Length: 233
Ligand SMILES: [Zn+2]
Image (cartoon, rainbow, N blue to C red; front, side, top):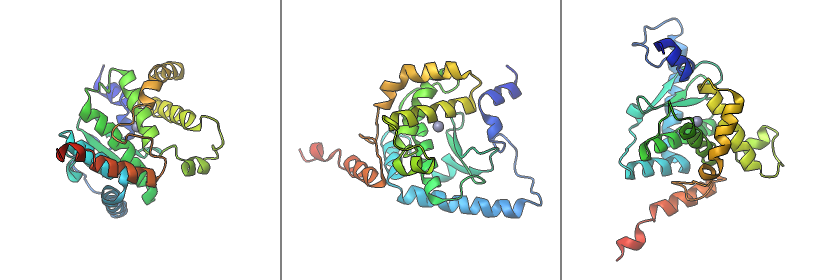
């Protein structure tokens, strides 16, 4: 497989700043800098205040994968409407500064991508060759990041469905896979369905599906207290 084909198949065409040399600068530099600064500020705020993000950062640190903001997270320009991505080759999370304009959106994208990073840290995920691994992490990211919470779904006029969480997670996982891998919809559906139950029920490190910020705060508190029983012995 030649390099350009490979990059296309792995979704790198969505992230044009990946693997590019130092920024040459242009007449757009000034506005890009503004977008960039705003993205950096929202990212910092998400990491410091979102209970979802805080729990994932703690869990990764406990698993030996401490996240360093400037090393592992990067605000960049992206193509299309993509909001973020996890670059497994460099263990870096990309936040799309041209597509994330609200703090709540930033919080969700950071959480979603941190779940991929957490999976990358705790398991030998083969992102590029094993579609079942990718599908599993996309199911977990959609399920646990708040992507499918009631308010977000209301905004998309998708509420009121029975088994709503499952349907939403399945749909979002499918879309994520189809955005970054050249496989047919039928093939992607088959893979998602094969791993769905196992991955939908794997709530690590939250211990539950955090349906709201309140849930996420409870999960964070439980995570912080998890060693208390043994440490008192
Ligand atoms: Zn994803």
